[in-house]
Every structure is written in structure tokens, then in C-alpha cells.
Image (cartoon, rainbow, N blue to C red):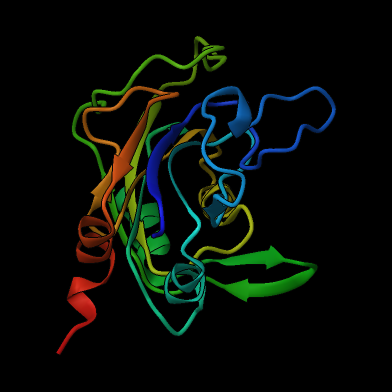
Length: 198
């Protein structure tokens, strides 16, 4: 029987169980079985949804580029993007991935009209008094290395804070950083793959 857990990864935590340079890891927050691992990853300086499981079939179904699935990010950026910058994000921008130029695929980009309700970050984001910040909702179907940060930087609005809010129908709604929730196989598969049927 496989195990499934939804974890709200805090800022400054590695998406792995083995320690590196004294940084916090998943082991600091959970004592799940040894064969459980994270599906995909979030960078040390990113926050949000991480799926932990020992169901090996999920890895390919979720991560292979041919199996497109939605990833929703809430991104706090420096400055206030105009409609041109939002259109650029939606239509794809050129970034560098593994030393090669790459144009990101079409996505959904929306400016939040007011900051979303999110937990405080520890440590807080460093603000510059004379530069306002804003939040963007990005919905992608791909996940290249540090892609979201590279996308916002390419449009002139550096990322200050990055939260993965949702993967398909699994979200961190109602959770706080460091929280972990046990899922059943049926609810995990329904949330991630139900839209693929038929």
C-alpha cells in the first residue's frame, strides 16, 4: 500500500531528507517512512506544495513533459507589472536553461488586485522603501529549473517571494508552512489525474 502526503514546504528548507551544509530538510518536519520521497522539487528559497509518496508510478505521470498538468504559483515581485509585462509572461519569454536559450510555453498570468492572504515568511522579504511590490498568479504546464524567477526577471520584475499554491486540484489551502496532511490514494489520483480520463 502506497503512502501520500501533502507538505507545505517553508522557505529555507531543502526538498530532500538528507542534510546539506546544515540547511533544514524535510526530515526536520516529518518522520514518514524511509521509502517516501518528494515528487519534483521546490528550490530552497521557494515555498509551498510538495507531494511526498512512495508510489513510483506517480513520478512519470506527473513530471514527464508529455503529461501536461497545471502548477499554480503566487509570486511577489518588485514593482508593479503593466499589461505589456503580463502579456509577455503569458505569451512566453526567453530565458536561459542549462546554458541554452529557451522560450517558455504559453501560460496564464494575472495580477492580484490585492495581496493574497498568505502566511508571513520567516525571515521576512527585504523591502526597498521606494519600490512597491505586487503579486502575480502564474499557471504553468511546465517546470524548468528556476523558471518562474527567470520569467519575471526577464520582464523586469524580479521575484521576491515564490509560493507554489496548487498542482492540479491539490492545494495548500488551509495549511501553514511546515504542515503535512495525509492523503488517500483515491483522493490523490482524483486530484491529479481525473482530468486526463476519457
